[in-house]
Structures are given as C-alpha cells and as structure tokens.
Length: 293
Image (cartoon, rainbow, N blue to C red; front, side, top):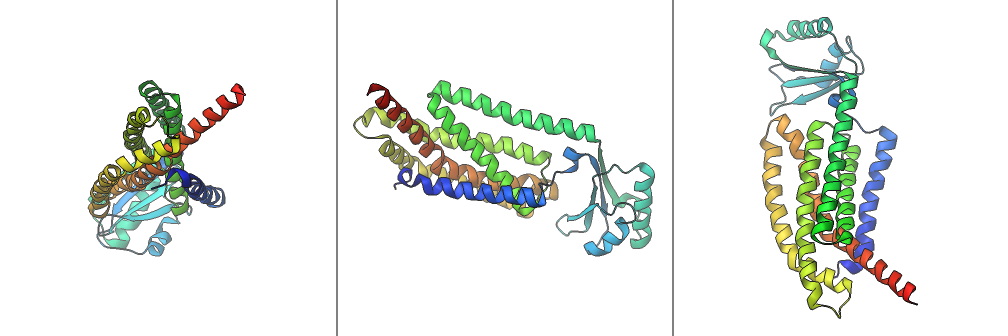
C-alpha cells in the first residue's frame, strides 16, 4: 500500500472537491440558517402532506422570499423560514390563513423561533471562535505530545475536513446552522483521534527504521492502523446513518454533517495527515542538506 507515494493524487482529489464547493458558494451563495442571519421560523402541523407550491401561495402574502421545508417522517409539518423578523400580528395572521384553509386547531402551530440580526452575528462570532480555539488547543496538544511537524500536519488535516464539509453543504445547498457547528466540533475530535492513532504508530516505528526514509515509515504506519480506522468509522457510520434515516428532523440536521465529517475525517487521517507529515519531514531534511552544503 503505497499511499504516501500517491499523495499528489489524494491532495488533488481533495482540492478538486473544495474548488467545486467554492464555485457553488460563489455562484449560488452559502445558505445560512436563521440562527446566523436572524429571522423567524414557524412550524405548523398540517395533518397531511401539502405540496410546496400550494403552501407558497399562502406564504407569499406575508413574505415572498420565505423558504418552505417539509419535516417529520410523514412530512406533514411545514417549516416556514424568513430572513426578515415577522411580528406577532403577522404570525397570527399567517396561522389564521392556514387554520381556515386546512381546518386546523390552535395547537397545530407547534413552534416559533425568532432571532434578531445582532444575535445572529454574535452566534456566528462565537461559533468561529469555538472552532479556532479547538484547533489551536489541538495544535498545542499534538505538538507537546509528539513534535511540531505532527501538530502542523494534524491542523492541516482538520482544515481539510472543515473545508470538505462546507463544500458539501455548498454543493447540496443545505443551510449552515447551530447543529452544523456542533457537528464540526464533534468531527474535529473524531478526526484528530484517528490521526493520533497513526502518528503514535509512526513515532513507534521511527527508532526501528532509522535506515529507511520517511515514506516507508508513513506507509508502514498507515498499513498497521488502517484496518482499525476503517472498522471504527464503518461502525460509527452505520449508527449515524440509522439516526439520519429513522430520526426526527432535529436529529437528522445533526446527523447529516456527522456522516459527511466521519467520511472526510477517516479519509484525511489515512490519505492526508500522514502524507503531509512526510512532506514536512522531507522539506526539513532538504533544508538541512542545503544548509550543510
């Protein structure tokens, strides 16, 4: 298994996915949930599935730019999201129209969430700070436990996972919200754990392979840990996928980024993190040789 020798292929594949994500993000924009942008979400249980076009005819009277989504296992609940804040009177007016149209009792309006723009900006800042703080903490920990080159390789692998996840969301047009941030933080811990397993084996192999180059050390360490990584990831994916298929909408919102993140994290721990470490060590060796000459 010569993964390190083929690192350019894996680096190119990841760069291609991220590039496609950037193109989609620039062309159609990255959609943010109302907890980031501010706005209002109203959830109404219609008791039956109603086509989006039919609901749109009602919602357009209040806000033509509102987004409409069906949630729940039977898709009878409709979630109406607006970027603009809708007042109490407008919300009551909208629900009255649905009541009259579908003969709904009062308890069918099951949830209302409202966020101001200032709150949305604060949530964005805190989310970004949480991710950066986690990344810096992991860099310090890995550098202390191993050495700085391992820390940089791990940090770049984590950046890869986040960019891949954001690219997937941009390509599929899925809103980024608070569950996404919670999933990112979970994925960072999961991914770094996989990378540490490989790096721990690298550190153990180096004393016994002094006459071999870093490529051979990296390849051997990956071979010794790849089975463990794949079994762990497959087991985790089976559980998360079951939650996504069988869970309610709130669970599915959290499970989707976890599925993409676990796949990306497993991929990066095998095909990205160790090859980056090898590249760093080879650069350091070339620099020493150049200075020695």
